[in-house]
Length: 172
Image 1 (cartoon, helix red, strand yellow):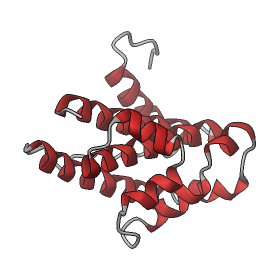
Image 2: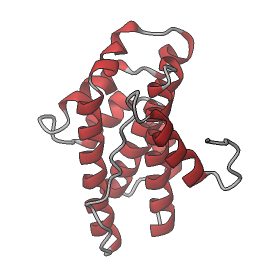
Image 3: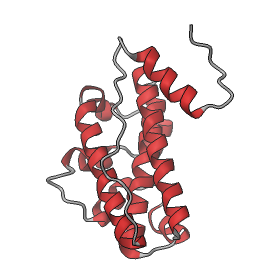
C-alpha cells in the first residue's frame, strides 16, 4: 500500500472514531457501535498491512469484519490494549447489525479507557507508517474530545463545521 493510501486508511479510521464519539454522546448506542467497529477494523487492518504487506483484497478475504481475529493476528501488546482486546471479542459485526448484544454496554461507562487505547493504537500505527514509508509523521496529535453535556454543542460545532464545507447546521 503506498503512502497516500496508507494515510487515507488512517484518516478514515480516525474519522469513524470521531463519528462514534458524536453518536455515543447523543445516545445513538447501536449506531455508534457500528462506527466503532468500523474504526477498529480499519485501524487493525492498516496495522496488519504495515507489518505484513498484505493487500487490501487479501485483508478483506482473510478477515472480513472479524475484529477479534484481526486483534489476535495484530499481535498487539495485550497489556497495553486489554480493554480494546475485550471489545474486539464482544463487538461481533452481525450481532450489532441484527441483534443488539447487551454485553457491549460496558463501553458506555468506559469511554475514557477506550479513548486512551485508541489514542495509543493511533500512535503505534503512526510509528509503523513512519517505519514502512520512511517518513516522520507526528505522533503527538490526537484531538481531545469532550462530549459531555456541557460541551456537546461546541463539540458538534467543531466536528461538523470543521469537516462539512456546506455547513448544513446552523449554530446560534
